[in-house]
Image (tube, rainbow, N blue to C red; front, side, top):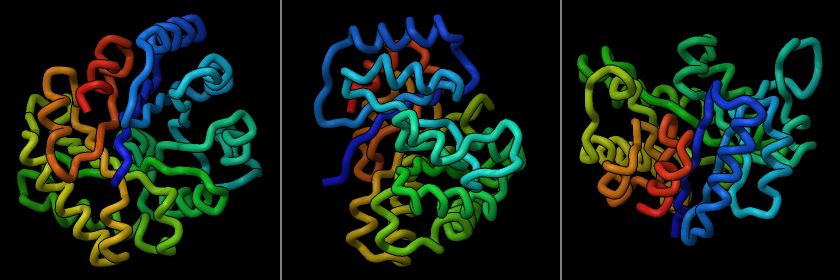
Length: 249
């Protein structure tokens, strides 16, 4: 059975005190079963979060990672740096990294390769823009992103991969993605993986939905057969909302 995952991406939010407060609120929510729960604080608070969640089942993950293991890359974070503080999973390819920091599929392929070579789990993000959806080009865009960044992996590498589909066109645009549209794309993605790597790998890879999941719509989205959880943005900054989403799965 595929694992279920709810991951909270805190993005550029929460100073040290706010990080502690949110972690305390999350821990106060108690236990959960049948789902892996992950949170991604900003990089300078990762070590703090690992220490404060060391007695919890909530995993701390990174928001980004450089493809080089060391060198003259000012401001960047390596896989070894993350692992040295107990972070063993990282988000790569987020739509905001692609849009605002010009991350290409080729660079992301290098990042993924570095991660899996060091036994680092990758939550790999991808998805189409509004113009792609309106032009009925969304399947081709998603297929291209996956092929360029992930389809050079060895079949054994897929145990480190979690997929996260982001319908960028439905995030902060006023447009709405329906649960049926989420399922349609997730099924398409799973079929692509099956064609390239076989049915067993496709059936085992978790595919998360990253399109503005909230307590009000989480249960309906998560009920779809190919949706295995969510990558949560704004709702992850509120402990009540985040755990409502966790329990809805």
